[in-house]
Image (cartoon, rainbow, N blue to C red):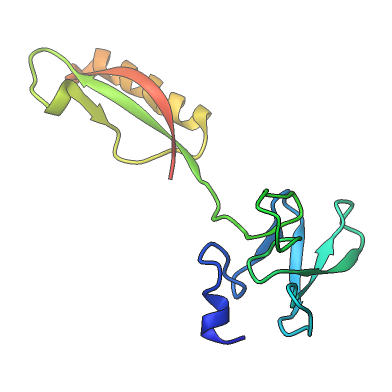
Length: 143
């Protein structure tokens, strides 16, 4: 496929992993089928995962060239994974100055349980060692 043909739809890169809008795996089989509007040949895995069927699509991944509606079987690139981390927020106590008065813990935790465990430890240490921060809350952040 030429670079001009690949640029047809800036939202779809046929060189990257593909799926349908509803999440089924797609394999690109051919890009040069002699057809008026659907030269892309793809294998789409059935939702059961046990077999594939072969279909044609437009260069922008659509099932129908005249259809402006997003269909569940349209081809899209696999979205990047969303990673969720849990971050503890602390408030400076006893007159300490900080930007906005809130400190974000230096790293994210992969689980809520881990973040809450550290927050509990910090609460305990504050009482024992007189640390100058108070736990506010644990928040979930997508990175």
